[in-house]
Length: 360
Image (tube, rainbow, N blue to C red; front, side):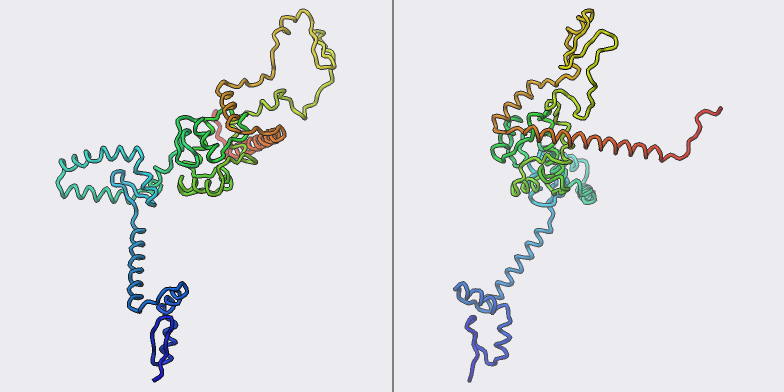
């Protein structure tokens, strides 16, 4: 009697049709893959057992994913296990853990078992009806100035934190010699990353991440541990900069200069060199040496920060780049004020009819 065999599965068949159907089964394909890696074949019973085990494991994983992490002390739900683990060491959770048992004892003393169960069920229903935005309340916390913007490292001071970010993540603040409020700027960046979940480099493109951990992972993986300070973003950080020291004369390049002429009053003479000669009767006023365009005097803290940043290896921008940024900021501020004025004028035109206040 003629038999038909399968070399991969080590089985024999009486008819060729059964053999061809066997070649289409998952059991045969599974043994083919084992044969490629030089593994012995498995029987049909063992294969079916492994399939059942894999299905059971997949069902358990789906059931685990469907369970939402819930904190009984804070009465909050979380979107993932990671956010729940980050919530546990928070100060708010620790306070609720300390006060939670006392509240439970009071409820037990004032109400019977049935009433306490009803109270718990009502609280659970109220928690389910809460807005989803409360799930991320603990995650929406600004990063303090003593913590790193890109990892969980904490320092004792702002200078130590900047040193860590500079040495570990190559982070630096552009045009640091013109920064007048370094602490305010780092605070704003902490709010931008911690609360807004926005990248410090590509955030101007409109992308936002679901959590602080996600945006930090993005910045570390993409090499975005740097501050974008060009184009329209200049206006966003303009409150923390003062570029007036780059043009101490304060003059306008397009300003028309009148020719030097003798004063009509006869008390002042302007020489071609620009020097001014005044009458001797006004000597007491010329000795005052008033400066109509005073330069801002940097504070001691600003000088110390500048020296500290130079010690970290931060380089200053060239004069051409600074002048370009000054022109861009000035232009954008003019456009912003012009647009704001247009909106105000249009708002005033919304009222078509006016009522007379005084009848004459």
